[in-house]
Image 1 (spheres, rainbow, N blue to C red):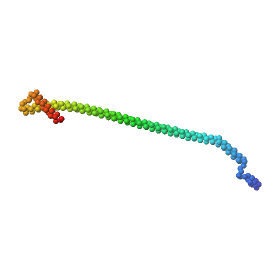
Image 2 (image 1 turned 60 degrees about the vertical axis):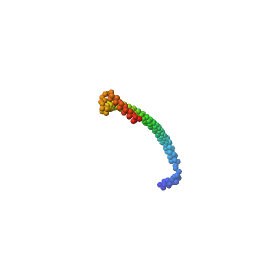
Image 3 (image 1 turned 90 degrees about the vertical axis):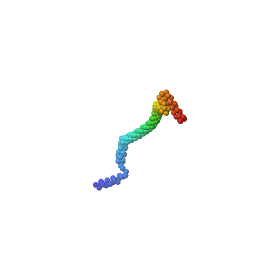
Image 4 (image 1 turned 180 degrees about the horizontal axis):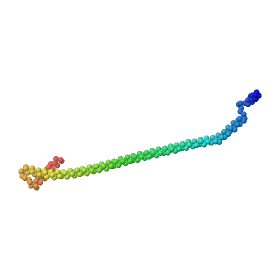
Length: 184
């Protein structure tokens, strides 16, 4: 047993623990190369594919966002132009309504003026007719009163119609002359 321990101790002295054995190094190197081959052949392409898909998705998202932004900008410009057109149309309609209102007002004023003139003319005609009727009535009454008064003053009866008419006409002519002289 002692030989075994001595032989084990001498073996440990012969091998350097810092320098690995060649067969261990070759085994690790072969394992590393196999692992590198597997990673290079299967894992790296999957990573590249995933990166490419993500890049495309991001770039596609950016492109979609830019397209949506352009569409939104175009819609905003369209909305603004429609708003300007609507305001212009509203102003035009308002001005047309004002002009139409002014025209209607002028027509109504003309109609009212013509109606007022018609009513005034009709009133003037009625007044003239009433005046003439009053004059006829007054002449008749004044004539009758004047004849009676003259008959009382003179002491004779002036029942003669022709004479009474002459006296009344003379009296009214004198009144007209006095009223014309007073007005002038």
